[in-house]
Length: 266
Image 1 (cartoon, helix red, strand yellow):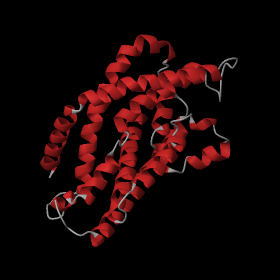
Image 2 (cartoon, helix red, strand yellow):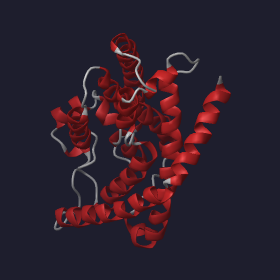
Image 3 (cartoon, one colour):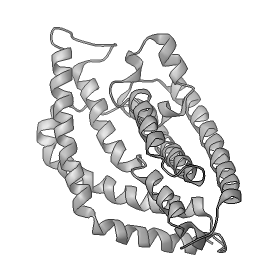
């Protein structure tokens, strides 16, 4: 069983290495996005020693962490790939084979994220002399320990959400509208625009019970000291619960979708 997915992983690595220059260029262009973030937040900190209890170095560290996390765990294009395989009939090849489509797609996701994650480190390493004065590494050992499951669970949440949106192609011919809506919500509630702890306390507390909080903000907040041990522990439990919920939702959508699916093509 494991050997099947090991082969899928190797094939995924090979296919993604073909597009290594695409990933590398995306990493380079992400530095321009980071430059915009630096300009914006430098202006925000003008005349302010701290914002929300964090200084400019801690805030910049947060956004640098987001860049790395996006390349290592973000489910880039997974929803479109699932949708294309359903609409083009390529999904049919998995219906009579002893292989889980969810596990197959997740294995390919891991291969893609491994390639893109390590490639983004190249431009970041080149820019490190300019960034090092803005990077504040955590000193508590528990943060590094807690970050490992937080990252793994974050990847599962991101992949599961993208996978579920892709499965909507069993019902809809075009899912781009759903994907764009999801992306907009994830951008705001995932902490990509600003650290979520800067929101009003009631909204921030409510966001902690949504899956988007655990996609980017939560692992970044652990690594950059924006949450304490108690919040990290409870967060890991909620994050695990969302992984289970999303897995059940994806399984339900898959089973229901197959009832509607007409096996043509593939």
